[in-house]
Length: 99
Image 1: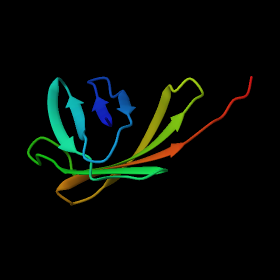
Image 2 (image 1 turned 135 degrees about the horizontal axis):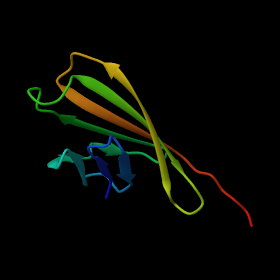
Image 3 (image 1 turned 120 degrees about the horizontal axis):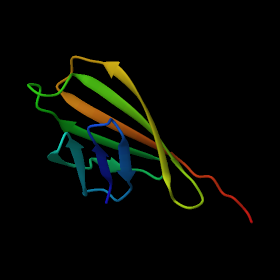
Image 4 (image 1 turned 90 degrees about the vertical axis):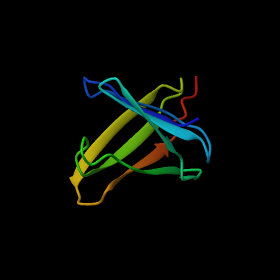
């Protein structure tokens, strides 16, 4: 399952899953469940319609990095748009640590 959530302190977490799963976006205690549109080996794109009465019209671009312990590090940039949807683009890069 791919799970994207953001809490009130603006922290973001992600779990990676497979195509057809849902994305759960939690903002200030409100859950909104969406569907994963596509999953590729190096990139995951999630597109869903948002409630424009409560959500700003922005595109969030996330970069997802794995550590060797599978802890996820996530950064994002914001770009203003007039589209009535959000697109989360998750780019995965693997780091291999030999011990």
